[in-house]
Amino acid sequence: MIKITPGELKVFIPYVNKLTGIFLDQSKAYLFEGRLAPLLRTNNCSTYTELYTKSRNDYAKNIEKSIIDAITTNETYFFRDKIPFDLLKFKILPEHIDKIKSANGTQPKLSIWSAACSTGQEIYSVAMVLKEMIPNIARWQISLIGSDISDAAVKKATKGCYTQAEVERGMERSQIQKYFTQDDSQWKIQDELREMVQFRRGNLLQPLLGLPKFDIILARNVAIYFTREDRKIMYNLIANQLKPGGSLMIGASESLMGITDRFQIQNYMNSTYYALK
Image 1: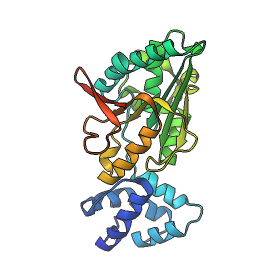
Image 2 (image 1 turned 90 degrees about the vertical axis):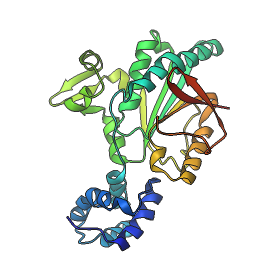
Image 3 (image 1 turned 180 degrees about the vertical axis):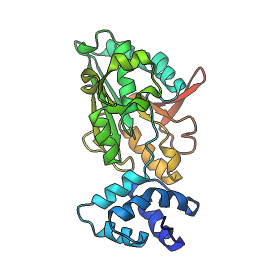
Image 4 (image 1 turned 180 degrees about the horizontal axis):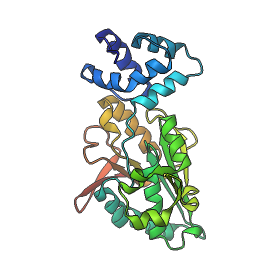
């Protein structure tokens, strides 16, 4: 494997940060090598400097997109972490559903955004929860949106096809049989669920034009890769996308303390979430 030099790292660290918001320091040389080495071969580059130069000169931005796809972490699975989904099922969703049913007329509306949705498992899991919770869901106007900076992740999420290992990670056999159909070696998500969700590419450090205001936003395990200043930018943009009183769910290792004062912390059992002030 071609080694990345300290000088090349000094070039790639700010470049990757600009493209993705992810900050990787000099200690992450192994990560750059492991994830970008295939791009050297694909683009006939003998050094990382050559890859950088080709990427900057690629007006179609295909190499840039490949770098984003390679660097971003797409670690996800259905119903990832039990506690947050219990919080969603037993506290956040029931409160929002009751509030919406009281305020709306003939067609209640509920909107949820999975920011940094990766390959779609999180927002599809939310769709399954809603199907279980709302017996007359056809009468509702449900807007579920997943966004991610990676084109490859968004493409896979949109397709809604997963391997045996992917569907078995996080779901019981009964859920797989209920919400998926087998297509050769792949499992395809049920059309009704797929039609509930829309996916789009987006950078959480930039305004996502055209997005509606949301009742609930899930931005879990995203900020851990960002600098403090970028976290402030991201959470401010997220706050702008929430309806008054809307709920924000973040990762267990993440916190808004000292980052923004636009949210009020909420505690339920052993869980924490945030309400827009």
